[in-house]
Image (cartoon, rainbow, N blue to C red; front, side, top):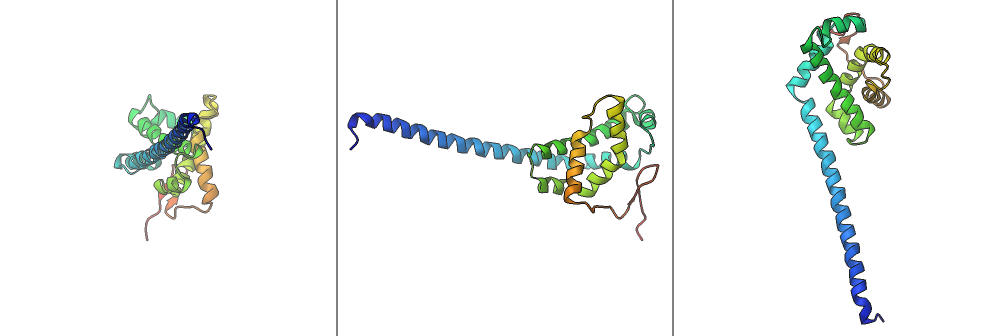
Length: 178
């Protein structure tokens, strides 16, 4: 039988245990809410007309063959608007790769937000440019999260190919619909 003088100690211990359980559940729920909010913010961004307008501009209206040619035609010194469109668009893919690598957003959910063909066509179009920047600026991490995003997409969906996008030296073009 428990003696009466031990009752305050037992009650204190039970109170502390209940507090720990309660606050750990609150923290777990807050963490999930933060992840959900981040996912919704990302979704909101990639569904905006402005993002897709920039993506179309970058993919279909900026033909180039070399890093030097891109820089002279679309770089920040010669063409501020084109460079802004490019960097803003690429940052979305870089951010998506970071969210994926850090397990902030579920993989399946992320690939539903950004169509897999968009990931593939964008990476394959700009891979030589990104790798050129890595060498030119001695920055081996440049575009690394975008590359991770692309690699994960290809692991999960290796047969992705847009039936209307054709690659050519001037950049991707759309085949005419028959």
